[in-house]
Length: 354
Image (tube, rainbow, N blue to C red):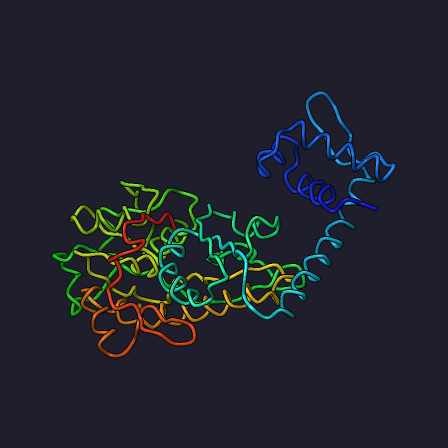
């Protein structure tokens, strides 16, 4: 009978492309990975890898076994999920990986929503561009929060991966509080702002692509004098009067003083924030509870940011939203909302890359 751990190792090798990369991803030594794959070859009486002194590649038999292996491992995960659902109580560890702005924005609400599940442990970590889905596919994470700027093929909802749309996150204009455009009565004309010192994330970042497209539609993208990895860094520099920027509204969830936020003219440039999970795991109570908490968090984030996008004072708008009954941190199944504004407490100092 095939050893499932060795089968999973072969599938991981197929994803990583080399023994060294597989070993690094799993925390093993390269020799240990090579030995386990050799043992799998003996179990199957097949040559699965074509080895040279410098590399290894899957043989035809290896590719065939990987295809079978992915189905077998999915069935095992489905069986585990079904048994977990039969027990009914969310328990165990759930790993959520998220792009940085989502990690900062969702963390307080998600933690409060899940804390009543005393047998469930949440691990929320940040992922680099394009890494979230790969981590879910590889079993390194249970759920990925990803952003879709509609600039490339989006992940499709299917049997292998299930996609849950959470919210739409528009670009907004952020200027210093003393900037003329900070006055809500002043129309936002991007053509007149083209010569301003714009700040943006580095070229190739999804939000940078959106900003360049926005400025191009306003008459051509001017040179961006400053490029920074973190949206938090950019917002801090805007607050100091150094320049202006267009950022996703979700970046404001951590709270920023000294800036004014204006909606951009024309058709909104938005990204979709989605949760991606492996199909076989969706019935696990721990995964289902976390997905419910993410949907609740998304609704409150969207409601809390709506008045901020139209305000010259995001913190004042936030307090107005709270007074109007829009809490910022619901507890699933009841409980008090988070009463402090964004930027106070956990996660407020993080500099989000996206």
